[in-house]
Figure 1: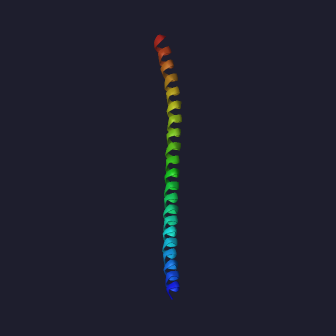
Figure 2: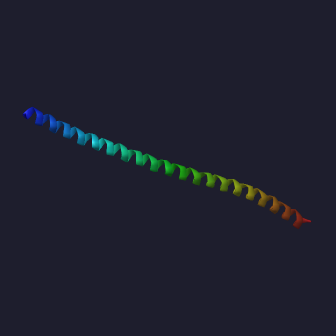
Figure 3: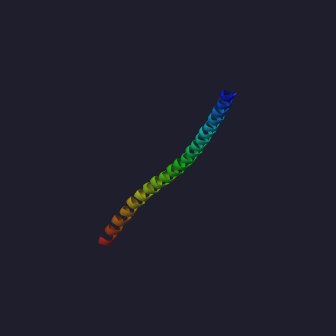
Length: 76
């Protein structure tokens, strides 16, 4: 009888430990999902920054052309 109780206690403890592992895995899965969302959002922000940098570069080049044109016009 004592052996049976010991076995039941061991089984119950093992079941609790398994449940803790399941909860940990579920927590980890949620963290990974959250991390995925953050990475996607940051990638979008980086893409926008890159796009804006390209636009600024084009605007600066156009502005430089306009300044050179204005300088030539003033010299005439």
